[in-house]
Image (cartoon, rainbow, N blue to C red):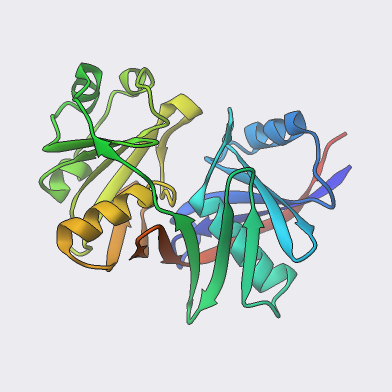
Length: 260
């Protein structure tokens, strides 16, 4: 079997920045273990697998160690691939996962991706979290991830977490965030429990960040920056039950996977 594979850098205008994602294009769905093996071999934070059915695409996402329920940057990468390479006449594409229906559309020089807004609530401070971050946040919330809110961008930039301790927490990962200097808010995302110590730019984390900062700042549209080593920027819109992330992607490579 020979499968086309693309790698794109997402939430950036430049290659070697943003968050790299692989997208594998299938004529039909392949075995789940093969998907996991490919993701492990790619060793990127996410590999998306897509195949077309009728007027939409089915999509699944894998880290090097597990399948995940939602990945924003690999969905935007898949949207870029469909709308600019596979079917450039389209202005919008819909992806169906096991739990979500996601759309990516062209908007001026951006791709706009709609995702369901995440639910979160105030949380008690686990001792391991404070120990792992080496600083206690001003506020802590819990949804799919912990969201730890700090007072300044400097707190986020200088953070050197203990990934062994973070791996023991009962969430997918930990978002750390604060007001930004040049952006409305900044963040970083750590998820050692799913094989990703620090994700360069995390679309799904912004399903919590966008509604939180929208309420906090009284704005429906915000600029966000993720302060990883590679870095990335996006526009975020609070649509109440959904959010919309606007960003760019750049093609890095195209090839084929030989499975035998």
